[in-house]
Image 1 (cartoon, rainbow, N blue to C red):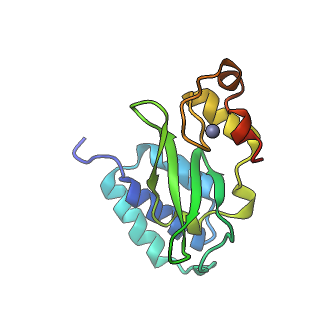
Image 2 (image 1 turned 135 degrees about the horizontal axis):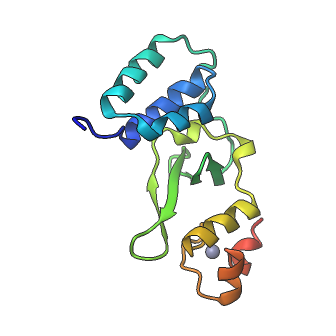
Length: 155
Ligand SMILES: [Zn+2]
């Protein structure tokens, strides 16, 4: 392949533009699998050429917390300046879970994307780590349920 696959910032921009234009996010996400960098860049140009049907609102959600969008897990935090931003939570190579700033994502999240206890458990079972506190699950009961009692009590 001459060209690598689409980068995360490209994908995030595509998600943002797609939502602003009223396109179905799941269909868009499905196309990421075999999207090259140059295809992504063409697609971004195409999306920018479409009129926004849902012009960017400042922020769609009003509270910090945990969210799941597509297959990804996010925590929304508030900055010292009072601005909400999202970090993506994922399994760390060194054990436990970790998170990285996910630019633009906070504008895609809606109240219905709030993480449920069942979704938190799925993350814990798949990764062996708690998506709320990011710690590796060590207690056999917590491993079994995918979350520890303290973090489960937040739901
Ligand atoms: Zn936890």
